[in-house]
Amino acid sequence: MKKVEKFINSHLHLLRRISQIGSLVLIIAIPFLNKSGINILKGTYYSISIGELDIIDPAIALQMILLTKSILITVLLMMIVPVVLAMILGKVFCSWACPFNFIAELLGKLKKSPSIHSRNPKTFHYWTIFGIILLSMTVFGIPIIVFISMPGQISALIADAIFNGILGIEILLVIVILAIEFLFNRNFWCKYVCPVGATLSLFRIKKTIKVTYEPNKCAKCEGKKDSPCIAVCPLNLNPRLSGAYPYCYNCFECVNTCRKNGGALNISFEKKLN
Amino acid sequence: MLLEWLNKLVSIKDPLRPPGAVSEDEFLLRCTRCRKCVEVCPYDSIKMAHGESGLKMGTPYIEARDMPCYLCDDFPCIEACPTEALSPVESKEEVRMGIVVIDESLCLPYNGFLCRACYERCPIYREAITLKDNLYPVVHEDMCVGCGICVNVCPAETVAISVKSFHGDI
Image 1 (tube, rainbow over the protein chains, first blue to last red):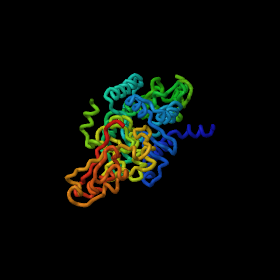
Image 2: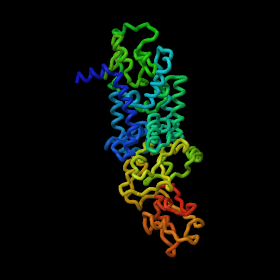
Image 3: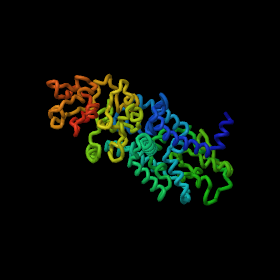
């Protein structure tokens, strides 16, 4: 067990990239399998079936509950896997699996990193945006989340392109968001807007895995303008200050970088050290 | 209501939904756009609507003229639906996807030609479509399930039979 833990800890970046590529391969493989009559895997990131196990995106489930004002037991059961995962590991779906974040992250790398903020954005902003989405959805009775769920849209687009050879024009929505991110604000969608990530954040508890910071171990980069841990963060957060959560999606890039620079940042289930 | 107004703007006005679909308004709220019904359909009858269909984007529909619903015994599409947007039906007779309408000005028998294509192929045989005077097909709305097989087989130059999707509450 210790060996496994050590391996994971020392190969965080590599493992994450493998996971992200695996997730992309999965959504490309599903329509190919279905086309040849194999239905063990089916669905998209809105709702996916692995054999008998049905999983639903909790954001879509939340939308359905709010809009139809009814709760289906089957839907609640389908939420168990993602909710438990979010309770233990935080919103790792975003950083380790979401195809949109993967593309956005790679595009972000083409640009030089933005100016480093010394402080993290207010938690209030995050919940306000999510609140506006939920409120407007409920008031107008329109299923907004299915339209702006980027992992769902991308997987459905890929599936239909492979299955029926049709590329839907909704790809423009994905392209526009990526373009805005590229031109103006790196990863603003994943950081502030995405309702899928925000729903997963609802299930964060005290024991959820998190990045911890020990100031006494942090010496080498203190005072430097571009701290490696902040510079490497895809969401441009500062892991050394409080308030990185609920924004942080536990990609652990900062921890990975810090290992080479003193090791003040760590991963822990326990209460935050700073 | 905003939802109704937005629905008027789109290209697919009254899509024929897969069997078991709840009423259209409820369907738009319940459907997760997960594509599972599209993927499991053995005849590839079910298609996915795209951006040009506005709020119906991502939802499944059937174009009867291309490929109708053959009403599988086990309804894999209903089985695959995670949110009961397609809710279970007891038998194929219970399905209410839509109702077909015959345009007598185009229908061959009404114009002096012998044709029994729709009558012969109707899966609710001798109940949903019967022949008046052994010649003229007549649709019985209470029995028609709206699968669209008759629409698919109609040999008339301009298709004489069309299916109207069912929009009432079931």
